[in-house]
Length: 128
Image 1 (cartoon, rainbow, N blue to C red):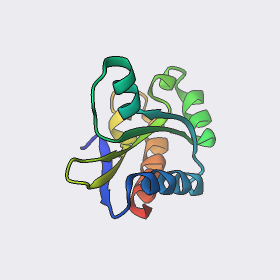
Image 2: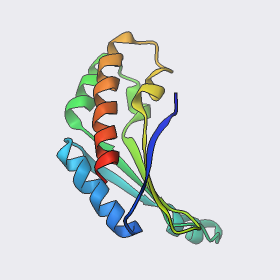
Image 3: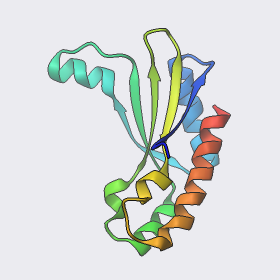
């Protein structure tokens, strides 16, 4: 099982980020954090890196359900979605596969939540 869901998109980098945020909202997610990896690496260690943004997305209903079943699940939240521009100009969108993450947790009650979130994140990536 891959730990991510991904797709090369026919959009420029900034448009892909906007579209990802829009599609996440449709599935009940809000973006809590946005990390500009390119800018951070340049500022902190003077490294030139590709355009790479990490969106920390949370669906509060599912987060509450998961936290109610497993109080340490917060170490795996929020769900990360990345948008990156490769050297060849291709823009790729990837999302964490929650089922792969949940395999590390020995709580079978989380399986249905992970399945539902996987479906939602697949729809997000496919819609971009």
